Image (cartoon, rainbow, N blue to C red; front, side, top):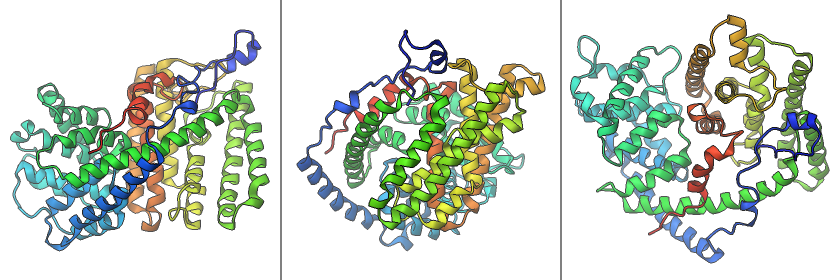
Length: 483
């Protein structure tokens, strides 16, 4: 959260360093009482367990289910936010269809929708699928059928699938341009819920969307589907409220911590992290060996992060202007997201193996890509919004402008293209990674998706929290009617 703005009587030098808005929520979540009582939450959990058994039944007779049935079920589970309860079943189902193409063998729009859905889901789950699957839907000139232009369902599936491209797949660039153009043309002609789904995807493609936000919207939309599955819908609503209850408890704890952390200014971060490490060591004797093992990785990650902070502080004090390459090498680490990869692993169970920690601490391509995307999006927003801190080191936009002597908006386009290329590097890395490490990698991917929301359209929701107020309200304070 952003540091509190100093009082008018504060030291002028510190005021320059702390020119951030206070948290728009104040102590709201410290005193807010979640609407679920313990007894109600217990009964909801019992009902959710019953529904899970019903949903598992949908995976029975898997050999007899068509590719279309499998991908539709998996996508529905994911968009309703309940897929994590059925990871084993989903993995088995996707492995079965890996070598199966949609069975109709025609080139109808429905078949394209299913082919695109299969392509996207398999790639998102770490399976390599060739983009050649789309060739059979093109004519001899390499163009898609003109009838597709008036089929928003297939266009949207194609658009989302193409965003799982890897760096070498230039043909998918054309797919994105084609599908985006025709979705934009149809945008104002569509009716709910397709209109909302297209609008969201044009802002952030589905493979880069925060799952929780998609679920918040999709629950209402799925209710409008004539042949929706009652057990899926009810389980999704129950699960959303139960997870929301947990998140509200965590928000209270974070808000209490933020009271003490809010006054910490950037120049004191190194000292702050050293003190944090001392606190970790102080409590190590009370922890089991499993937690001690995890904390050792966190300790090294925080030490490394503090060194990057000091590196940037030195640049600032010496008024040093780094090259674009030099700036990125330091700044994508100083953001803290590579460190968060370690911290996230501390909070999960079976995913946090020693192998996963060793993987994350070496800053592999996925973690590096996450940091770079974050840096690019942050710097584009900083350039558009203007600096809040007059002692900040030049960001990547400014470094590129100075190095290449080009105008700001041109550089923004270049940096945006770099962010897109880096997403594709991340896509490829997730399909090349050892399967046992994929769950850890997906934690990093999910963290990166959050940045797409925070910096959507060039806004800086990290510094200016008010930009995200309505989103936070929807996620945490507007209950979903269960039943």
